[in-house]
Length: 157
Image 1 (spheres, rainbow, N blue to C red):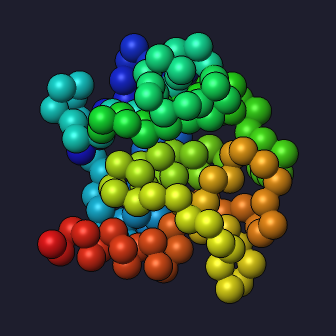
Image 2 (tube, one colour; image 1 turned 120 degrees about the vertical axis):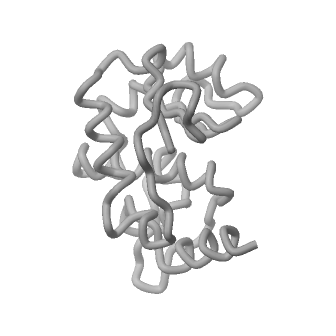
């Protein structure tokens, strides 16, 4: 279960809808058996919210965001509103970037770290840092088969 933190999210209901769509995409984490149902605040396993860059610095500490990137820490995915509004040069589509950042940060909360190499097809793994710089591979906002396998394996333990 997840909730959108009303303290972090000043863009409801559009942000709430974007989060729901990204988390429930049949090509996304659902392939790993994950089911994301909205829950009341205080009853959710995952909290997702938008935050201004200066708030991201505080909410993500000790992760160094410099007010530029989003993070996942302590069951919370903190999405930087600066990037939410503008994406980065790596992305041609704001909608695809938004799917990426939600899925990427939730991927951390599911136990995944950062990927370093492009896939054999030339696409970035979802867990590659795709917000910081232009990539040597094509941007990707959905988990790869390998990432799905890793999350499934973690669930089976």
